[in-house]
Image 1 (tube, rainbow, N blue to C red):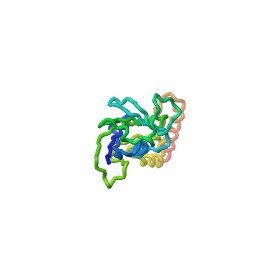
Image 2 (cartoon, rainbow, N blue to C red; image 1 turned 90 degrees about the vertical axis):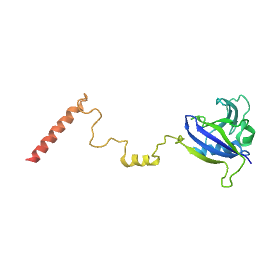
Image 3 (cartoon, rainbow, N blue to C red; image 1 turned 180 degrees about the horizontal axis):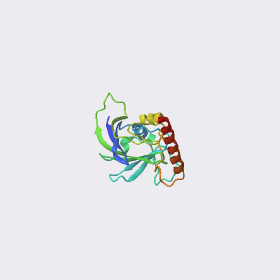
Image 4 (cartoon, helix red, strand yellow; image 1 turned 30 degrees about the horizontal axis):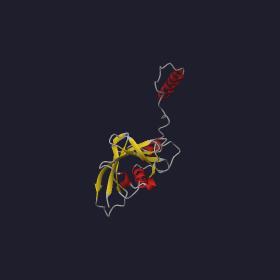
Length: 195
């Protein structure tokens, strides 16, 4: 049984990609779920594949379900479409779009065909991960969850005590006189304690 290896690039940064190995007899729904798993996305949104050419132009649509939108040609359904039936080239390409509101787009390219199936792998499988992928709901940092801990511990959203406003004295604010008067009083108190 043939094993197809696809490289799934994040459209906005081709240094971010995941390699996915899948049996040629599995369907596009299996590929769809594996891509979501590889990028740590949930499976709650609409999704579709487009058959593509070398210039990444969208062709025949292979959709998760029929959506309420106009189609140029009747789409194929992921669950009913076996992957081998849509492979016409040794470097076949597909465009995968997920969550039509956020419009996450991934470029899927066939990079290898192997005739030997590994007994140690459960297909479909993510075989390689490169780069920090996008986070579905928000931003992801190199620190990950540790940054949230730092923010909670130090409460970075509030100004730190003991520090003045940006701009400091002399920026024309009427509170400057009050701050100067307080400083003079504090100096007097400190001066009295010293004697």
